[in-house]
Image (cartoon, rainbow, N blue to C red):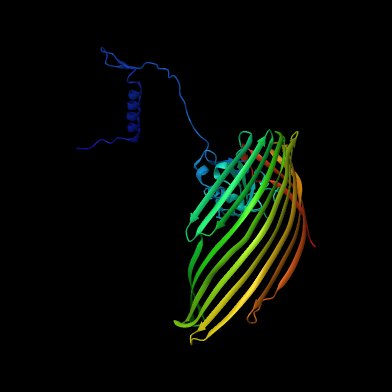
Length: 436
C-alpha cells in the first residue's frame, strides 16, 4: 500500500487551523442545524510587549557595554568587569588591552587614568557604562591604539557619607587590601577623599621549558626550571573635587599620592644543558630585586558648552621616582664537576617629570561633529644605572637625561549616516617634537 506524502505546506495549514480553533474555541458556537463553526469578534483588554536594549551595542564611534543593572555589576572591581566585556583584556594590576589593537588609554568620567591600579580599587557597581573605541580620532595622540571610556554612576543624595571595603585572597601567600572612601556633596559640589592600603603576596610563577636545536650535526638540549614570587605593599591617598555650575559647565581637580615602599621579586632559575644526550653543564641562578617607588598624579579639567560650541580642557601632571636594587648569584657546574661562581649587584634609579595639556573645541556640522584643538606636553626623564661584579662583565654603567617638548595641532570631522558611524573621516594632525 502506497503511503500518502504530507507536504510542509499542508502541515503548516493544519497547524494554523489548530491554533485558530484553540484561540477561538471558547468564543465560537456550533450550529446544531449545519454543524459549522461561526467566529465571533473578541476585543483584548491590553497587550504589553516588553523588550530591552542589548548589553553591548554601537554608540557613535564606540561599542558601549551597559554595566548598571547587569551581571557585570557583581564582577567585583572595575578591572574584573572590564575583563568580562567583549574585546577587552584586563590584568590583575589594572592594565587594559583591546583585542587586535593592543594597550588602551583609559578614561574615567573624561579624566585620563595615569595609574591603572586605580581600576583595581573602584567597585564594578559604581560603573554606568563602558565605551570601547578601536579607531580613535584626531583628538587622541597618533600613538593611541585604542581608547576605553568608563562612565561612573552619579551618586545620589547630599551630605556626608562613608564607605569601606576590604578584600582578602590566599593562594601561595596572602593578599589583603582595604579601601576607605569619604564623600561630601551639596548642590553642585562633590568632594571625595579616599585611602587605599594593601599587601600583595598570593601570586607565584612556576615554569619548565625545554629548548632543542642543532648546532651543525650536534643535537643541543636545554632543560630549565624557574620559580618566582612577587610580594609588595603600598598605600595611596587621593582627593577629587568636582563642581557642576549648571548642565553646561563643570570643572574639577584630582590629586593622588601613590607610595610603594617595597616590591620584593625573588626566585631561582636552573638550567641543565646536554649535547647529543650527554650532560655538559648546569647553571643555577638566584635572583632578587626590591623595588620602591613614589608617584604624584594630578589633573585639572573644564568641560562645558557655550551655545553649540563644546569646550574640553585638561591639564595633567605626573611625577614619579623609582629605585630598584638587584642582585644575581650564579653557579656553574661543568661535566667534570668543576664549579665556578660569580655575583652581580646593580641599582636602577629612574625619575620622571611629565606635564601635559589639551584643549578640544567641538562644533556640530551637518550630521557630524567638527573638532579643533591642540595639545602640549613636556617630559624630563632621568635614568641612572650602576653595578658591581665579582668578575668582568660586558655591561656599562649609564646615566642619561632627556628633556622633550611636544606640541600638536589637530583637526578632525566625524559624520554619521543613518545613526551609523562612518569610518571615512577626515583628520589633520601637525606636531612639533623637540629633544632638549
